[in-house]
Image (cartoon, rainbow, N blue to C red; front, side):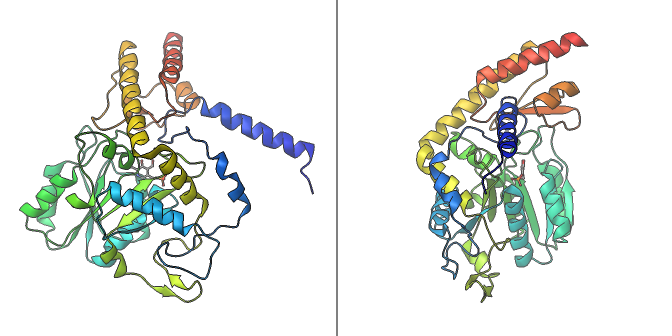
Length: 372
Ligand SMILES: Cc1ncc(COP(=O)(O)O)c(C=O)c1O
């Protein structure tokens, strides 16, 4: 049965609304600049990536081959060498859950340390996984307070620490230095430790910025999570989880029903998102991503300049495209879809945010200021 004219009108109205709302989208870290229409034929396949993408299963209508290529791209980007395993997740939250789950299986007595600026997905997962945890103070720029971390680790040194490092905090884009955390662990002679990097956004920024702090496997990460719908861009949320294969092998379980290893958090898994990521990796490539990051940093500096001209205290962390400023009035928050938090808001400069969009935002801010 075909859709009724009313149904068509509903879909058209929804499409127009989404397009319109996209014009004032600057407050969340999602790149709207992509075109995957070439992949439309795959909408008519019942793709399911159930199971481990690196092992064949009874369910063949999958995109595991493409998923493996995506994982290999991120493994190379994060200097994982040959000892890596990973999969395409539903987003940053699942990647964080995977890292915490793996860490808990390796260190059942472990205590999780995370900063005040950590994304709420981590505290949620700590509750779900029932893991002991301690919150560490943050510095004003949103980075973890290393002194507080060191002092707390000292007190709890008889339990293996599991440290969640933020590679770009949600509100301020601050980067916890993995190399400094490893130094602290070495100084305290703590050898049984685990570091998970929540690199939701920063995971696609830092590798393309010269001199940026490293958060990869070669400098001490044990697992990491990067979102796919953030900097890469995708019509549906997605991400990747990456970990050391030798650790994953210790917790893998074989499941007869699907004829593969049950290494992923979810059972049935999205088979389209690996295709989106694969497509972007091939169309944009590393050089393209580097250019996009450079362009975003330039627009971020432009936004800071323009905000300062309006008398706003605007700033950003060095390796971030997140521009922090005092939270504007409620109408601005609503129209520009800003994320208010403790008196601040931010513009997250993604590839779709050009100077023209900043100008429109600033014009609205000036108009709003005249009202009060
Ligand atoms: C630092 C950080 N970690 C994790 C997440 C959660 O990612 P997702 O919404 O993809 O689950 C976010 C989302 O904004 C984030 O900023």
